[in-house]
Image (cartoon, rainbow, N blue to C red; front, side):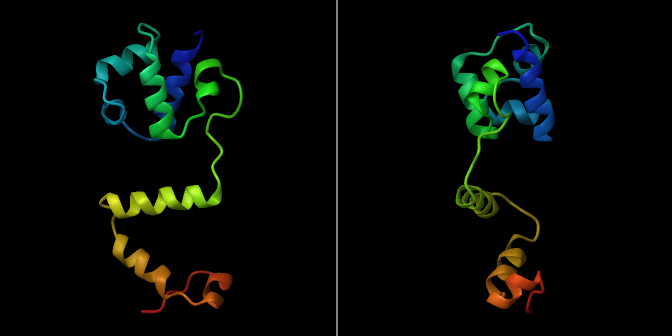
Length: 117
């Protein structure tokens, strides 16, 4: 488990979330996450799996440091995740973005983003 705590800290940092927000996403307390990041506490297998699931992290990388940090996902999976978040969360201008995309012609997709009003 050497340097596992550093990899957890790296996931927290790259997530762009505060320690508190990160801990809430994996159903832990902020002090527990801080202890894991400092190496004072080892994560359970369940916590490792939750980190990987919630943040798209490669489990082998998190446990050993080997391989890429993030799971490789197909374009379809990435789009599905994006639109799922877009519809589920309160994203600013969500409806406007989706309407803009829905109104684009096939030619518009090739030439860039010029939305019809």
